[in-house]
Length: 597
Image (cartoon, rainbow, N blue to C red):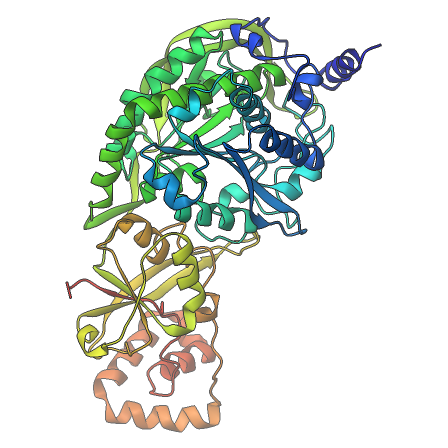
């Protein structure tokens, strides 16, 4: 029995719990080779397997050896467990340095696979494409673009491999794990930057300045006919609408046409409102900056999120990814001037207000949708009505889509933020984000019109999320009569290319700000206390000298019975009014200026 037959048998057994498949014989099957130079591990397994970390690196070296004038491999970082995170560079004429790639008049595309290591389609698709470049079959590609390719971003998760990592995914037979060795999800890390993988990506973007960023994933969720779905924040809910319009109007038609010609069914980025009843509609997700595509949208870096359909066979998904990337490269080579113009437009957009959080609209739009027939049944196991997909195509002429476009939180954008020197680690993160930070050298110039936010109420998350205890807070504004800014503070202007990103990171109301991720937990603790024997006589004297304060105290007692009966609350109220109370307690230490300097 051949290896391919053994693997196929194992796959069938592993997938016996999944819905029935539709037959597929796309033209892209011709892209595979069974032998010959640089045949990939994926091809040798008849499209069932993906190579492990060691085999992946060995194939990278084979590619470089076969085409050293156009291919190079570099290490961009190390994982938590000490593995190299490697990236391939593919250029036409040995122009491998960032400066040379930036100046060779070709757009650069950054393609990333394995941020979720079980969703590894992009690695095997790109190995085939690079092989075709190396062997001369697709020498046209490097005449169009420069390529940066990260085969496995989450290398530690990739080596936590098993046949049982994703219950709703057809292949590869052995696949990696979603999170890294510290159980952190790299695609929730684009603002807080806790993982070495995402920090490495930031450095690549800063150095090579790609024109387009592609992040390849595999879906969860419902069954449908589309095998390759992809998307980006739509122009009507984008922080970079000029870029989104170019992607919508000038990229998508080229990509979709290429996929359709090769026997694939391209579709929109799919999420459902109710996984037990698709007819209730689709969720039109607008990514926040914790995600690659949300971060790219806010930064003004064109970013496409690919979500291949998990229920389609691995071979079909990988071949679809090859065709997708070929289409993206074609679109980028034809439309890079329009895209560059849109990028420059967004770099010079300095909004005075910014939407930082959205909710789903109650009023849907409607689209035609290529679904899969299903039935609902009462499950004795869950005690609930569940779904069984039947494998038969069904067309929905008008399926509702509820877009996440309603404004939930909006903030006024300061002209600048001021960071005290004790928070220099945040400055390091800002630099990784590509944000310009200057050190205050003349404090007199920054001495007026500063605003500080004080937490008026707050709630910590009940359990950790991505290694953090997140916090949600409400704030009151305090206008400072005297500026605490001195030489050595840091100033972050919002009048810079990444204005929106600055505000999302530093304004504490933003749900993916440093504050919301728990980088300022120290302001929630008090470290000086009071003894009642000292407070009671001091407070009595204070009330005697201030009739207004005494009236406020009496009013609180008369109007709040709980307060009136609580000795702790009464004395705490009085302590807050003394000059001994901690004046930094609950105050957000990053200051804001709404005046142009």
